Image (cartoon, rainbow, N blue to C red; front, top):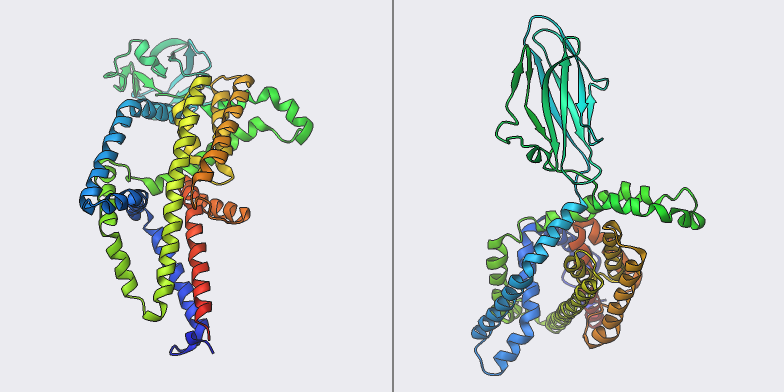
Length: 474
């Protein structure tokens, strides 16, 4: 009989079942409150990255609190300098790239028409100076029929082929073809170019017995997004694809139909839910550093407090478990920080030399994506290639991007990774791929990034517990 079976009704099976249920409940609570716990997670990560520096300064004779404050001040100064020198460009390029990536390709507006007279009103809706950007969606035949005292809604659509300012006139003709009124239509700033006063565009106008809901209709901004441009750019190479995959595999249609849903629904929405409000000024600047300071200052005391709660029989097991998990987390985080910095820096410099648009956010994305095993380098290449093709880059530029990222991966694999201790969690590739897919489904991009280290921590914990429990069996 095992020592673990004594003193507990039901023996080891019941203990194991309760432990599994407790673990699942804890995971469920963490997931349910992931938005609230996100600042604590960031503070915890920051503390683990800075712990070796604090320990070295304390070992040299400097008080621990003073060491933490000095390191924090240095980090804030460095981050501030980076933000001043490159933050404006990075923010601008990210905003512009995001707008171009998910830009609406068309907009719709409604215009109300009311017959104030005592007789039926019959007329036609006609577009003048139309360059295919504007169209009348309803009524589809353009015939206007209004009984006395009734209203009707005209639905208009703006679908421009580009993002230049567009302008046209909606002419409402009644009484045997005589002109009743004209309504200005504009999109992408077209109304401003036409000299329409924004203060009067929404004012209703009465002409005879016809009341028109507005003098002008502003459709806002619309135009082809980067996904559409990419889809159109892939058309010339479709015959080559047909030779290998068949005519049923339409690359352009695949990108147009599924690209937006994958970006917005699978990746961006899950990430937004997790990070919503996290990076507001107060939270990021005050709360995360405060939590990191607390972990750095009281981390050893917190560890001792946990160990003191453990029965003496399991003291060595718990101590070994905490030590291995600490090594796993610390080595992984510091290694990832180094690798991400190197890949992002080389990517940004290389893309700028090649002349790729949005080099800063694309290089930064390559560095961050590099934390995702197997898929990370591929994400960097595909992202840079897709943006380049969508913005008019040729096959030659695409080839240069591929060569650049192969070089960057060579530097990472042969120079950076060998110097990193415990960066690899030593998991089977299928297990890594499964963890990344689950993380993507639950938390978007952030889930993909944290899935592997969390899985690694769970693996180390299970292995240590298993080895320790085997030693306690009689």
